[in-house]
Length: 266
Image 1: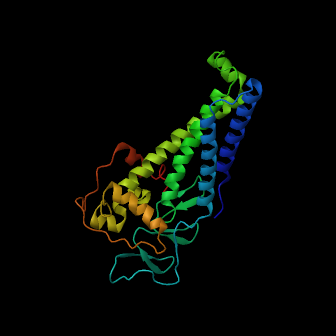
Image 2: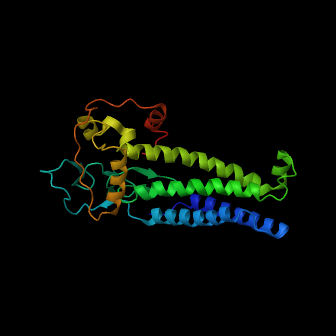
């Protein structure tokens, strides 16, 4: 799976500009300002890039089509006509890769990778580090401007072209990633995937058992995401009839936006 160069280039460009501004500030004033903040920023850079690298090369949970992986007599399954094989519920065939992904969450076009059973928790952690990364990038560039305390706002932006470029871009990506993080965390807490959230009763097991057929409560749902990523075998999901059986949950305005195929990444 080929990695997308876009997030790499944006993050590396921001890192170079932040370090340049910090070094220029040190040489001009001969002291190191906000050392703990800058040290934490370096940690954030490392963790963000390492998580991005992991997501680009990690197996999201590809299922082998060579043999049946589920006992259809004991557990409900999903039949894939492309792989000609029965797979656990919540999996989905990704046509671009010609493979089925276990507990498919969504196709991340930004990273050019699938998010599934084996990397979903890592993706949520990656979003946390990215939020810190973009927020601190803009913040440090602002504070590292030598004339920040003496210039008007318009003069400040005109004085530093890299500040003009970096700060708005940093906070723009922060807002976008924050929305994605809230949505990812919301679906995880509710025991559903982004794909299930967007498709709803178009999926047969959601239609038969209800939207909350995998919901075990906030804490257990998050624990399940961590558990299935670490275990060697793929999870066999058994839906149960919930209080919303046969009834589509009333969605918030934010969730209804994600139902639109033009906005949803699923």
